[in-house]
Image 1 (cartoon, one colour):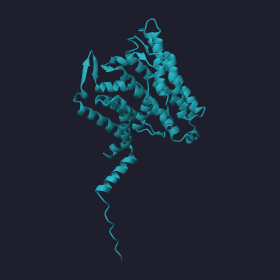
Image 2: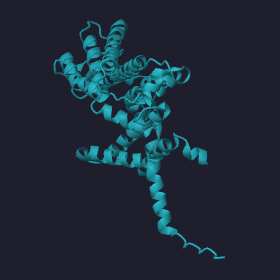
Image 3: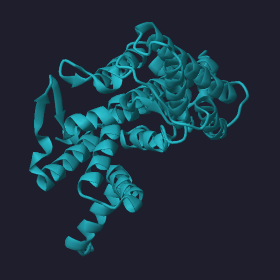
Image 4: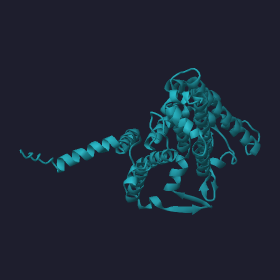
Length: 346
């Protein structure tokens, strides 16, 4: 039991289960799943489907944070990716053409990789602090997305493009399979090869890693490229789900939610050890919390405040030092210290 308590996935899983139980108590139909036209529908399916973009962004963010970095530009990359792909599809004569859709998605992903490479070069080569380097693209990226869309919402009428965002595969949303594929690749990339060890080494002690022969520059470039690619895929899911691209609002606040998901999942902002499965649980917690807030009817103007308070409580529960202080105070209150027994004088 003690080993389970100490496992890094224990508290994220416990918090997620607690949220789900609260929803079940509040609305007994929360766990109900129905099949319509060969596709599953229900609150649990919606959490997985709508949380897919956040999970993708959080996977990339985990690798960046593991190197003691940060990427504040992922929300802007989400907007840019969706804007470019929708622009290419909308300008095609036949929007349902598979080749057109694949070209649009490929161009968006290549641009996302290039943006990730740009962040990596600023951090690894130019020596700019990650928070500043990515803040540049965070601000400029919104402008780039607005330029691509000409300040308008681009709509597309393409079933082929809407496939990954709205269609089903084996009765489940395609977006779930996209996340599963990216997660499996990331796990193989980091746990079945030396790259995971390199990432943790660079995050724990860059100087020692350099002396050990690890090329930290290459490692940092790779994690930022992966982060940009994950954000680009998330942008495709977001735009595909609504068949439109909004350069101003798409991916808004994703960077903050992704950082929270990574922290809730047990990865430290100080770099080093990282937990991809914990990050997935963290993203599910945030999406479940968002669903819960909307379900119980909290006014939209205070939604972010309630969400921030709950996330704060979650982080405090996960903090081992905080729990230690609470336990110590509880013991002091209910079991006051016994008086010292005087020593016998010989």
